[in-house]
Image 1: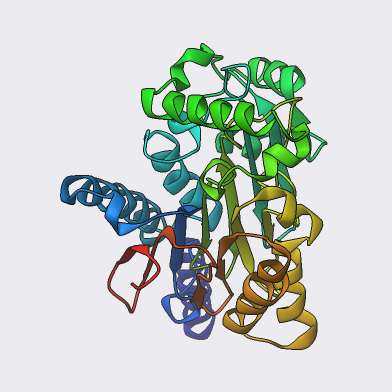
Image 2: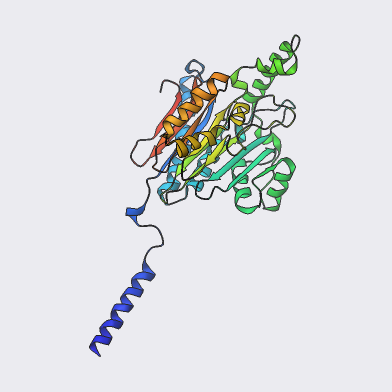
Length: 348
C-alpha cells in the first residue's frame, strides 16, 4: 500500500506541476527582442531645423520607439509592437501619415497602409482611405478579419464601418504646413507646364514632394518578425494614385525565414523594383546579411535609376539595418542589448 500511496502522491505532484506551468515560453527559449522605426526619408537638411524643431522630432521618434519596445518587453507580439509604434507616428503632424498626411491635388487626403506577419505571411492593406484615423489599424483588421489582402477607398471604409471602426471627417488631417507645401507644388507644376506636358512637369518636382512614410519592423520573444507601413502619399497626387506603402512586396514585406522590411521613398520605384521582397529574397536565397542586401537594393539597384528613399530591416536574430540614399531619414531602433538610437540626418 505504501508503494501505491507513494505512486499516487507522485502522480498528483506531476499533475499539479503541469497545471501550474506558465503558458508563456521559458526564459531560456525566448528570442531577443528588437524594433526599428522610420518616419520617412528625403531632403532632410540640418540647416532646415531650428534646435527646437529638431528636439521635437527626436522626442516623437523616441516616444514611438519606446512605445513599441514596451509592448515587446512585456511579452507582446511583433504585430502589437509595430502597430503601437506606428500609431504614435500617425497621430503626430510631423510625419506624412495619419494626422500629418499631405494633400492631394483636390486638397483632400488619401491614406494608405499595410502590415505583414512574418510567421504566417498573412498580410492586410488599405489604399486611398479618407476617413480612417489610423490606417495601420484598419490594415491589420483586413489581415485578421477578412478574406482579402487589400481593400481600397469606399469599400475599405465600409468594411471599417461594419467592424465598428469610427469614420472621421477628412479635415482631421488638415495642417497648414502641408497645405503650404501643396501650394508650392501646384505653383511649380503650373510654371513647368507652360513648356512641358504633365508627366514631364511632374518630374521636375523635387524629392520632398514625392516621399514620406512611416513604418516599423520588430522581433518578439517568440521569434516572430513583422513589418508595417503607413503613409499620406505624395503631395499634389491625382487620379487616385497609390504608392508602394500598401503594396505587399514593394513597401512592406515580412517572413521569419528571411527578414521584415518597411520602406519609404518615391513609391513608383519601390513598386517597379519590388524593393521589400527583393531584399528578403537576397537574404533567403543568396545567404546575404540584411546589411548587405539592403545596401545593394537601395544604393546599387534603386539609386542608379533615380529611385530615392530608404528601408528599415530586421531579421530573426534581432539584427537591424537602416540604409537610405537620401540626405536624411527619420529613424530609431532599440534592442535588449543596445541603447535607444534616434537619428535624422545622413551623418549620424
